Image: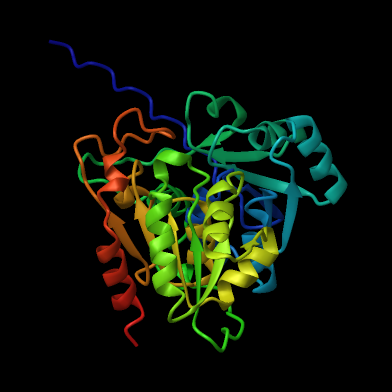
Length: 338
């Protein structure tokens, strides 16, 4: 039998040119996802220190990225509104008047479309169905079937493909914290921008707050886009709501000794600034989406419908209603035992 001809070798891919010039990274839209991407961005900065690193971020995540500018880990943040179109974001890139050689977009978004419209030579990202057409260099990461992985790996494994060393403790540090309040100060966020299904019953938050107020100063925080629970709690306690956003909210959380909150954006802000937190999980999966850091405690009641990811519970909301006041108080005592 004649020997079959050998197939011609595939051409080598061009090298990844992110060493020189400017690299712009589109921050994920959600605060939680943005916080998970920060260690990966730090790893890229350490691997490619000679280039200019820009972050394109919406108004919700931009305050975290500005902290990285203050620390010298990012060169510039280009802020845009969450509702901005690809055309408007392209105009913002042009107004920055910076030569951009490469970009990273982790999710399909107007930012990813703007990178293509702007004509950035190398555009990296995961090759998802919608995002792939905006990319010049799709990056595939092999994922093994097994236990649930934390979402932070979605970003760390990506930048590892670009030559970064992401699994270093230095990539997970918090910004320098201001002096804490002299009196024990606990922030409490009874709402959740993830919807009512992610909220512990308000009457239990009220009992919890009454217990805490005997020993500490309380700060009641309104969740983004869902201030109702915070207002109701403040009214029950005869206090006012602290309705801060952006940089001011980060600054306040950094001066608090701790936070108690439902799963939502606020715990991820607290995690970023290094404030110990107790987070009550319901529809979401903490192994996948818990805030980063070992200083935080998660309380979760695993029920048959856990992990539904719904905004509104169509059943009896048992994942949250079965979390008791005594167990939250016990976690609180344990967290602040010192």
